Length: 79
Image (tube, rainbow, N blue to C red; front, side, top):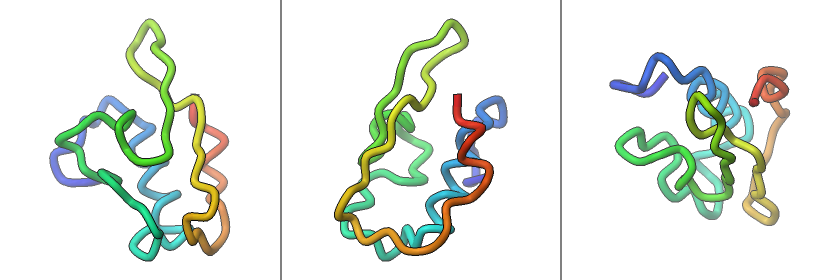
């Protein structure tokens, strides 16, 4: 988990795993990825829905963004 990340948000660890498993440092656009000073909902390619316990990832769109690798199994645990 990125330093200082909200330990109450398990999606941050899943997103970190996704980022590194798919070559995140080499993506064409990686605006705000792993930047915990902004909402994960503002990270490039992510869309959120507001749930009773806060925002949750509802959509990931990173087409033509140079992703390479294997999707981590943990990705299915996004709410």
